[in-house]
Length: 452
Ligand SMILES: Cc1ncc(COP(=O)(O)O)c(C=O)c1O
Image (cartoon, rainbow, N blue to C red; front, side, top):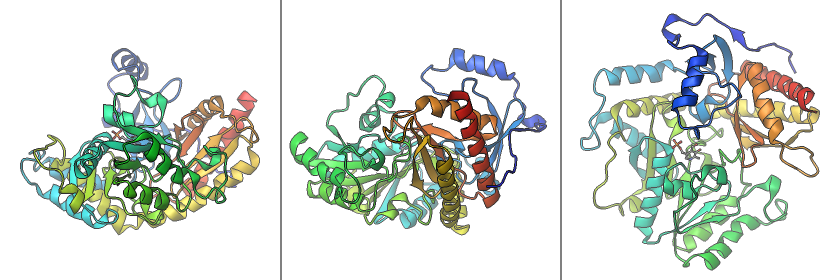
């Protein structure tokens, strides 16, 4: 592996990017005035003041290689010129009308989604976040089927509203407990820690087949739907094996339900080769949801359903900011670039390079228990011991800090807090992947030295 050094470097911050407050004053105000449950990374979280392409700068002028992209959101890199140009032009033309008036950027995006969304998903409803997109999807499923019970996955993350928290399968993100009735959480396809103690493929996809048992024993036998991420993002990029969704969705449909595919993290080329994460399996959703990477940072959520399913939504609905021309213009520009530059293919190529490098790291660092993901969505799961697989959350926290000290930003995840999520921009090049692998190697070594 190359020994190129690419640690934190300092650079003069342009005057326009300098914050009016000192770093410490920003941290203090965050502590004093922001809800304490709002999580930040690192003991001393650094305010980010500027981003360009694959880099961000903090308020002290330190530059970082950003391999998290604000939770898989800045898929084209920071301040992408074409996206920003589209935003600038739109904000100077028309910023807001509400869904009460059709607007061109919105219908253009809806038309594009009808072409690019999986299967026959063709009718869009726009909101501002992944939470709202999933909330709407769950409502549509209920209206369409006339059923109210929903199957969700353990370790899944669906959002922060009461209903989507209810669908979320991770205790730390279900604040205040769940009041949402009728949601059953089935075992997920977590092959590294198989809930049934089996191994793929001799397991015969027991986790997917168990959905039938759960429906028969814990529901009325008629369900509204099944909500699932193709790869569980917050869960630590847990990736179901081939055949999983085919079996799961067949069962769900047999009991009256629709398949809601949450592409909030996996959408738009992230998983490599295909635009939608679910295209790696041979199934078509009835409803698909997008957010994050769709806007490259502009707030946007989209729920896209088949004509038949969408037709069940009668009565009135609106979203004041949903479909606002500025977010729509940003999303339109994102998809234009993703398609034109074949970024799904780049994600496949660069993802393969990243994966090969991570596997080399696993040879040298036994703390790496599992490597998983697809394309430019790769995770490491850290364990105290490869035999017992005891999760090593302390190592993960320390490692995140050491990677930052080396000038690399990555994310954390997993129910046990022992996974790191690596998700560079989709247009990343070979040298940055190579550089990041060197920094990861150094951060692993530094963490081992500090803790072992
Ligand atoms: C898979 C998935 N769905 C939904 C959401 C909720 O999106 P938002 O935070 O935009 O409300 C998230 C957020 O992390 C997510 O990862």
